Image 1: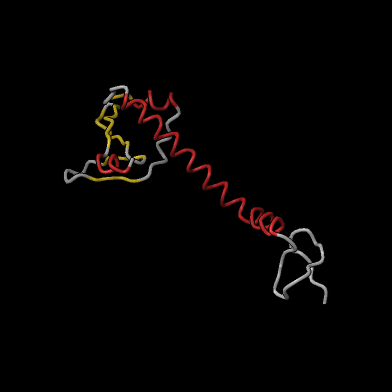
Image 2: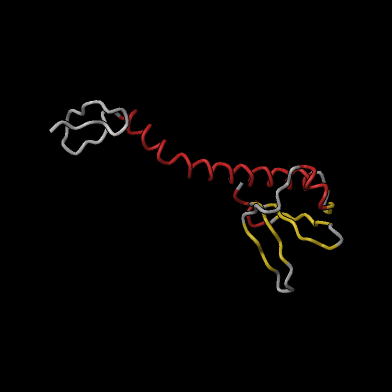
Length: 121
């Protein structure tokens, strides 16, 4: 029985359990199969990096309180964050890696930096 490559259709020589004629075909096949999930992960990671960069730039400029519209104008997406820390008083801090924010009212945001993550840099 002749075996054919799952990617290019060429005849396979060698071991009886081989599915691909070369490493290039194996990589090409697996990249094509995983493309959709990899693109989703890549897009989400890109949004998280962008949000982190925006918060980091503002925090390092010394701006500890900003209006929500200023973050929107810079391209910040409030739907994407890495984690939420809730204080004992019930206030929630939304973090994007080590930089985060807390809504203070009247559409203002208080920027924060989580000191737990500073030691890892």
